[in-house]
Amino acid sequence: MSTTMKSATASSAAPAVRSTSHMLPTYARADFSFDRGEGAWLFADDGRKFLDFAGGIAVNVLGHSHPHLVKALVDQAQKLWHTSNLYRISGGERLADRLCELTFADKVFFTNSGAEALECAIKMARKYHSVSGQPNRYRIITFEGAFHGRTLATIAAGGQQKYLEGFGPAMPGFDQVPFGDHKALEAAIGPDTGAILIEPVQGEGGLRSVPPQCLRGLRELCDKHGLLLILDEVQCGVGRTGKLFAHEWSGITPDIMAIAKGIGGGFPMGACLATDNAAKGMVAGTHGSTYGGNPLAMAVGNAVLDVVAQPEFLEQVRSTARDLNQRLAELKDRHPTIIQEIRGSGLLIGIKTKVTNTDLVAAGRAEGFLTVGAGDNVVRMLPPLNIGEAEVREAFERLDRACTALEQKAAS
Image (cartoon, rainbow, N blue to C red; front, side, top):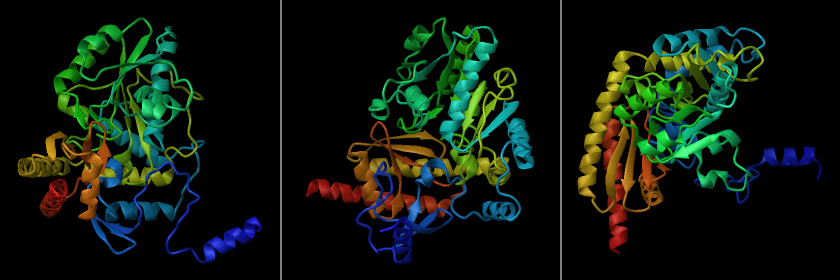
């Protein structure tokens, strides 16, 4: 059969149930898909309705089909989609200005993903020391349990064997230390160390928060040794913890910060933010991206910031987080054989389970409640930041039923 005939046949009558797929099988996908979303709710193509506390893995900060984001995207799509970075992009210049006004940063580079934002951060740190006359200082200290992306550089930075296995020698330049081990951290600093890279709240690593005093200690350590402090706020940034960025709780500022996920509200985009000093080596020709910062992405990013950067919005996130955490504490008391600990920050919440975390994710899904697993046997809840009391109550009730179902299964 010719390629043309195969394509025509496949598109004319897709089977109701697929037994095979031409998608690369790198995901263990649930056997259903979603047709539409509204706020915190997703509607499957088989008619089921789900309360979405997975949020596209911390992406949908304003839920699904938020009218302000939809309008921004549609308006821009009717004017201009893409030009490349050979020309100025006014929406990107505006978004960069706004991000710098709201943060420590002086410069912004836009990307399509968190991994690309981290790649930019890693390159920037190396280039900084190179143009400062110390090209040997390319090594970066990272922490066990970290997740920084899926590129060869970022899996080496994360250091998790399950992501490194089978891809040949790990990219050199990363020295990993145990999470929270201050002595090991100091011992790892050597003449070739150029930076420290850390997530203020580990997402994939199990919702482990770095205490504010530890972030302050890291800032002091970097200043003492002439290191750059790089923060990965891909998952914990953009209002997720109740501040615009998680490091604000500690009162410190980084030299470089990678963001993504929430800043696009569902549209693929990220950014690397930096001080003028940290970015001094990144001159014309040192880095680039064909799609990064295109007009569509910039329109959505500006629309997200219109909402999330408002003080009253962030105060509401903090209030909702307090309410949800109180409900989860009650849930822990109700189900002591299922729930061991509630952890995280703001609306980046983890439930450390006494059962296998995938069992609780599956039990929740059976109750129409979506969550996502994480390391350290944790279930993550990453709801839209604009949920209210009704969604918090509904989440509690559905999780309560899921825990009860697991208890009954264990007893049978």
